[in-house]
Amino acid sequence: MEPTDRLSHMPARRTGVQRHISILLATLSLAATAAAETPPWVRATPFGSPIVTLAQSPARFWGLYAVARFGRLFASTDGGATWKPRAPSPEPGALIVDAVPDPVDPLTVYARTTSSLLRSTDGGYTWTGIGTDLPSVATLAAEPGHSGHLWAGTSEGLHRSTDGGSSWQAAGLPGLHVTALAIDPREPATWLAAEASGDFIGDPIAIWRSLDRGITWEATPLAAVPSGFNFAAAHFAFDPARPGTAYVFFVGESNLGPVFRTGDRGATWIELPAALGVRDLAPLADGTLVAATDFGVARSSDQGATWVPPLPLTAETATAPKDALTRVLVNAPGALLAAGGSGVWRILDRTGQWATTSRGMVAQGTFSLTAAPVGAPELTTSIEGNGVFRSTDRGANWTRVHAAVEGLQPSLHLTVDPAHPRTIYGTFYDGLADHLLRSNDGGLSWDTLPVPYTCSGGSLCDVTMSLV
Image 1 (cartoon, one colour):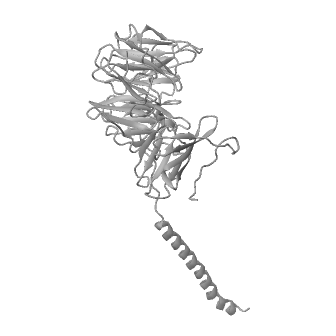
Image 2 (cartoon, rainbow, N blue to C red):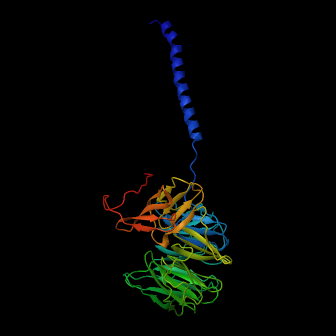
């Protein structure tokens, strides 16, 4: 072919390339249009999270921090009405387990993780490691009225910092494994500490006291002896209505120890045999005790001698807010906060009613979801350890219809009977096998049904319904 013949074919090849480009652009345009027309995904999970720690900022009365399971941190600046997530620990594999707000600076907060200590000067948005040369830290406390004054209970005694954790000095109880430290907010010279230096199961946890802001310490007569297991940690609560009165109780992940009371700043202690199943205590301004338990709250007006309702609570005697509670604290005059398996709760004395206050917390797993096939658009979901929830607006808002502490509830395989939309089925695992559950009232109550096990492993694999 002559050169002129080759030139005569070049426009045709350019036209073919242009045709391919045009097709490609048209395809991309259609894809972009389809993507633009696809509705965006929005959050539809019930607000809440299992809470392990709830702390109030002394410098900003309505400032709160909540540490959720798996180290997630949330903060509230409106007394718990709404929450926003904060940054997790920057250390790989380290989880935040406790938050300690600075007593003076409202933006400074300290955190104890599974392996270290952290400091934030912007309300938890960013973190800096502190105390990297400290022995293993079991507890962290801030000295009231002094910004940056911290005390760490370690496996080798108490250590103190006066510069926000940048530097530390040994400060008391040398050689002892200090597992808890508390400072009376109304009598700042009175301090209580717990040490567990024993090497064997059943070794006692000894309580120490200081009446001069931690300068000197003396052992108290109390050495709590567990019955066959170690208590995970001691916790203290000071009575605002009775100077010198304090409580100590022992809490583990799977066991709860006794509760003791002192009326003379720790010089003597008495056991409170009626205070059973207590996970946290909050003395009110008038001295009334509020106890957080696995089945709600109970109150005592006689310094823990008796309780209403009587302790321990059970599924049959569960009280509002009907949650497995881990923390309870006084947030403001007349306001009480509690935290547990489903999030944060708030009560006002003028109403006496508990209400969930976890808006903004998105940190709980949804294990099953079903929609009513007929009738009004209704969603039902089950959250293990929390309860059964219902939504009538496509997940924008949820109402808890059954609390986990009330008894059996399904965890998987929810399905609605198409002929009877108020009838819901699901499965529950008791540690040995799956069981089929049924609710005839839209999830408010559940019964166990007999079922033949034909699935591999002797368990239920699925539950489905049909219109036939």
